[in-house]
Length: 91
Image (tube, helix red, strand yellow):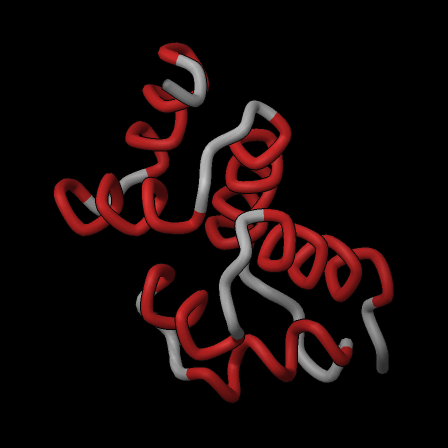
């Protein structure tokens, strides 16, 4: 079974913040093959990862870069970190 909606969202979010599949996998704490499978629709991200990807997408629309996402998640590793980025904006 292929999950087209999630596939599109994962790839869109990753590209929006300018990260490779390997770098995005590192940010999310998953194996690079997991990202590939999500993007191809082979597997579906869990609800937690779907929410995280949605927040990364929103952060990208606010101008947040992959490096900033990486730094924030490395510091606290939580969805709340991305919410904080959205509240403060891209600056």
